[in-house]
Image (cartoon, rainbow, N blue to C red; front, side, top):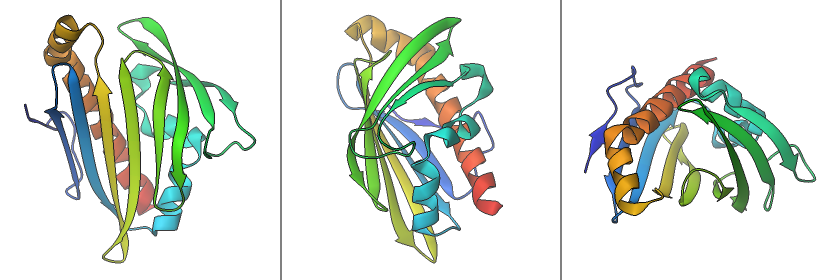
Length: 175
């Protein structure tokens, strides 16, 4: 299964795709070239407050609590937040399970709407800027029913979220 981003004006330097990798498992991959240094790009993403800027308003994203010695992303940091999906307030907790500045970090869902959600953020030096790649491995709950819901609208909603994100990141890098 291949889905391309058509719901937003995706910057020319960006790609987004979703592939099915198992019965109810998927991988969402993004790539975006940024005209900022790798250190600057990594610094932007290690500050969880920037999630507000790159998350669509319709998700009503709310950071509830940071469980860490620092307000920034570090190995073992945990973040509690809520999103609204289909008028349901959904709690979500993630933990940073891999932190290697300024190359990459991974956050994994501890509690939330997915059976599994593991999100790798990678930053590579490229052509005087940064090539940012994301790989989100996720598994929807309820196997067949979850796969049907994914096909029906969840895949498109994730595309909308990541398209919005790509546009906002592009705007930020141009500032």
